[in-house]
Image 1: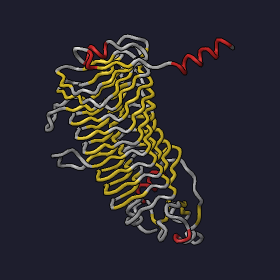
Image 2: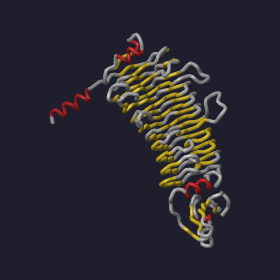
Image 3: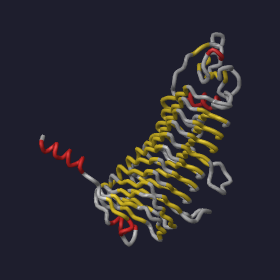
Length: 374
């Protein structure tokens, strides 16, 4: 017991060793000098001609320094040898590509696990990234916290993907602003991503098309968005054709000036939940799978359509089509006993025993699967 309390007291007394980047002849040599538990203050601006490589765990880079570079990537966190790298923190730093127009601007911060080991427990906090093809790229890493990031003027703001037989996941995004990127978040073959108070909007300067919010281009485990704000986009979330997501949950988000809030029309999912979201000046809150399927459940609860009107804003025809493929069971009535549509909540579905079709209420009328009034 005495040994245990001595260790606790030693931990409380521990003061991390802080180094200054200005004490070294280059930023790379300063990073290389760090040992486990050490912090490097980066408060000077750097114009780098080559990539800044971080290849060890247990270190922290902090400060208000600006790193300007055309290197690709500008900052690399890569585990190529060790069994695992963990506990890496980068905060307060700004990473900029000076070439503000066109493609071929590389990656701002690349976090990759290309060797036999793993990358765990990594934090990016109060980091700004501007003017890249990909602002931040995360490959295979697990348990990553992205806190109050500012990513702008990129083709892709944040890219999450896995390859080489590995599966990255458990990325948590807290707050932050993704602004003026053509695709704000791109996801492929990845585990869960959770977003809390995340905001994104508008396309990159000079782009002729509306931006995409979250684009999923390869099957992934789950997307969870709470209290977010999505504005001036083609869609908030989109499944590319034929792609599957296991779980999607959107709670308390605001969708403003979007073509579609959540567009699953070309993909498939196990369970989808939309609860307490608000839609303004947009074409549709939710388009469920059309050719694909919802395997286990769909929940639409307490969503506010603002200046939008059912059924056009909720995808009635597509919902009925997806329900028909989902294997779910619904109350069944002959048409003479079917309750009036204005006595059931919008989105309420029944099986019509007279026509042998699913009907769904928009709060005023019953609709058939082809979108015609039933």
